[in-house]
Amino acid sequence: MIADHDTVADMVIVGAGPAGLAAIDTLGGQGLNIHVIDEQHRAGGQIYRQPPATFRVSNWMDGPLYDEGKALLRDVESRTDINWHFGTTVLGLFDADDPVKQVWLNGPDGAYTLKTRAVLIAPGCYDLPVAFPGWTLPGVMSAGGVQAFVKSQQIVPGNRFLFAGAHPLQLIVADQVLAAGGDVAAVVFSQSFREVFKALKHMSVLWRHQLKFRETAKVLGRLRKAGIPVIFNHSILNAEGQDAVTGARVVPIGEDGVIDSARARTFDCDRVAICYGFLPNSELVRQAGAHAEWDRQAGGWIIPHDRDMCSSVPDIYVAGEITGVAGAEVAAEEGRLAALGYLSRMGKNTGDSSIIQRRDIESRLKSLRGFADLLRQLSHVPQSLLDQLLSADTLICRCEGRTAADLETDLAPSPHFNTADGFKLASRFGMGLCQGRFCSHRVTQKLAQQSGLDENKVGGFSTRVPVKPVLIGDLLPK
Image (cartoon, rainbow, N blue to C red):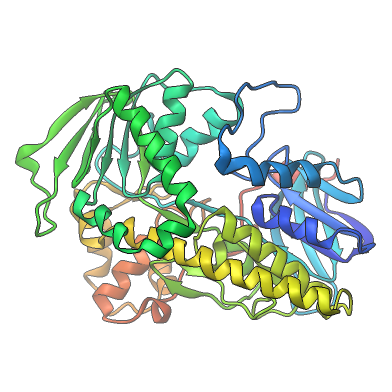
């Protein structure tokens, strides 16, 4: 049953990752009624994912890169003036344009609504789905999914892993798998080493973020010492196996960007971890009516905002990856900025100290975004490469069982489809439970390519309530 909570909150924060944690920290001591919603059972998000409270995990998030985040997590999690809603999913936002908004939630006791004057949406991102023959086999995972098992409970979800992609996160996860007792067959990058070496030209960025590069160098050293190949200028071709992964084929990429299938190498493995980038988890804020813009480098559909991190909908703030995938440090600073913006609009914390604090945050963001831009350049994946990985019977829309051949066939009678929603109605792409999270990125790009229109003109699939699946039983009277 949907149970109404009559008390009107000052702010509901969606997501207890870096952005949400930093916002909570900044809002402290203001006497506000703050509610925090997160699908996990403890705060931290993906990067600071914690083990269950009853578990004790040795060497949890070891290393200097995590020190600042862990300190913030300790400070915020101990707060008793915050209303925490863990294990809870946001199903939708209603009355978004009104002074009092309705947040529809589904938690351990069923569905209910919260009333609030403002919402900060900071839900993070998810791994870019990359389709190739065998990608639906049990044993093919995202690198982030592998990391979730290893980080919080040190469970290695397999025996022997092949990592393939373009993002350096796969190096970190491979190292974590190795430290947790797993075996890594290889780490495969689509970039050439020459492209990676170009980063050395950005000496000012390297100097300001030398800790990250030193830690990455240490990871590479540990992988090399363990005898794990780190292979550049190669791509996964397919995952092998009938009912589960038994191996994977990897192919070199020519200077012209064309994969050379004749020179494929097979690696024995029972897990394939894919890491080609990330997509902003922007469905909820788009459902609320906020304006979105397509930025492929920043991850697809991102949410523009003003200086206070407020979206086009009044009192709906955004922070973190939905403003452009840029990492935990940028997310945290944006969370602080959103909190300051909200306090300013409430007439609180408007003195000189607030002005100085905002100026410091904006200065740090400028530096951090420079590093994020460099990382995006280094991990960019040409669409032409992803297109080459498709065979006719490769699934694109997993929910509706629609293949790459279906995509071409459905476009053929009407080559001038100019909106994603129009194509969705005609083809059923994106009509499943995930609401297009697996297929919308590719479909939008394909429609833009075929129609000659910009992705912003094609648009994305409209997001409907509930934005995530919910059991009918959770909506029935208890």
